[in-house]
Structures are given as C-alpha cells and as structure tokens.
View 1 (cartoon, helix red, strand yellow):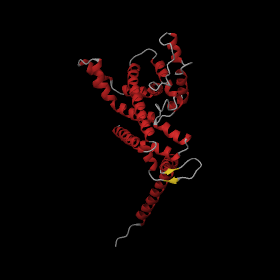
View 2: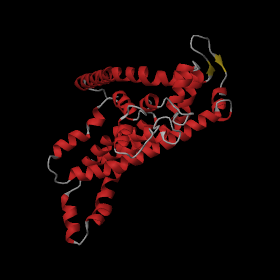
View 3: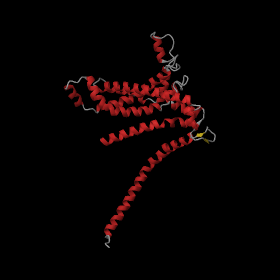
View 4: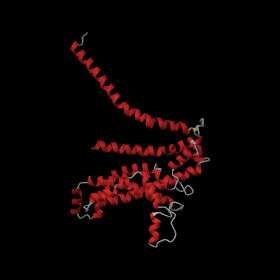
Length: 311
C-alpha cells in the first residue's frame, strides 16, 4: 500500500490547523454581534411571547393561560378597543405616507433642478428630520393649542375665525393634526432618498427623450418614475414600519384622545402595560401586528439584497 510522503502529510496537517484557527477566529469576531443580537433582540422577543401567554401584572406572579390574551383582544373584553386601534393605525399610517410621498416627490424635483441657494434650501428642509421627535412634538402641541397656539392666533388675527379651533380636542380634527405633525417630521427622509434617486438617473436619457419630442410630463412618467420606483418601494416600506410604530407624536399631542380617536396600537400597548399594569395584554398587542411587519421586512431585505447583488 502506497504511503503518503512525510512532507505532504506535514503540509496537510498544517493546512488543517490553519483552517481550524481561521474558523475559530471567525467565530470569535462574530461573537460580539451575536451577543448583541441575542441580548437586545432575540431574548426580549421570546420573553414578550412568554409574557403574552400569561395573565401577569407588575409586581405579581404570572398565571399561564395560553392564548387567552389574544382571544380577549380579537373577540373578547378588549376587542372593541383593539380593533379601533387597528383602524386608527391604518388611517394614521396611510395618510402620513401619502402626504410624505407627495411632498417628498415635489420637493425633491424642485431641489434637483438648478436653483439659487439650493444648498441653503436643502439644509432648511432637513431640519425637521434632525430635530428630536419629542422636541418637535411639543412644539406642534403648542402650535395647536386652542388659546395660545400659533395657528389659532394667526387665523384670529387675519379674521378667518372668531372662535378657537380645537385641533387636538375635536374628534374629527385630532387625528389629522397628528398626521400633519408626522408628515412635517418625516418628509425630509423621503425627499433625501428621492433626491439621491434622481441624481442617479443619467441626464443622457432625458436628453434623448427631449430630442424624440417628449415633454416634461412625459419624461416624468416614463423616465423619472420608473427609475425611482425601487427607491419609492424601499422608502415606503421603511417609513411605514417607522410611522406605524411611532409613539411620541400621538402620546404627546393627544394621548390617544379624544374618545380613543387617535389611539394607535403602540399607544394601546403602552396604556395596557404602563397604566393598567397588565403586562400580558400589553405584550400581546404588538405581537398581533408582528406578522405584518415580518412580511414587510422579508420583502424589504430581499429587495435590498437583490440590489446589492446587482451592483
């Protein structure tokens, strides 16, 4: 039987050892990230699932009830309030996203063209994105105030109204007031992404379309929008996740009122947990929305990975 030469066996052993050290080094390098993921994401998520299966209050022992909390939310004692929060969340998110999309596209097109002091306008436009959400929420709360607020003072001074408008107390205006503040804060992100998308479109395409007789409107729909569509989809999914999970504006401006007209599901979970001290129900509320976000994250990550592979 043929034997392996000593030199070859030594080389093979060394290669095997080097390979083992590489694997060990690799595991060692990813260990900090793995610990962060487990400690900050996996463990809280699994623990919230465990709490949602119990009737547990702050300072008390939990009682395992399986899916009773979910049943109470979907068709039980808390069903009316839960489904109201679902409807409010959908209305709030959809209205805010439509407003951000329209304003973001228009401002991006304006800033993309040759404009005097364009850098200054870009800086001013991105200020709402840089201001902390809590600060801007309190600012909007002051502007909507029925006695000392900016909007009521201006409308009264110009003679358009003779009695203050209850922006945050009127059941028909409260949600739209919160939406307006949310659009103001979130539009710069949309503008920034659209502006980056516009700058990536080659100018030669527009020149060729102009030579072929296309006007500005036709160029917008047949060149700009198709090339911006990947950016629009990614921005829409990201902003939808952020907006629907937003708590600061609803909590500070209206606290869910009047009559639960602005009570979104994050605020409902907060109320169940921090005011009613019912941790089981509080954990179950966001988990019922988790499948929706999981699907959006799946398609978002898939699209981002495909774009990265294409480049």
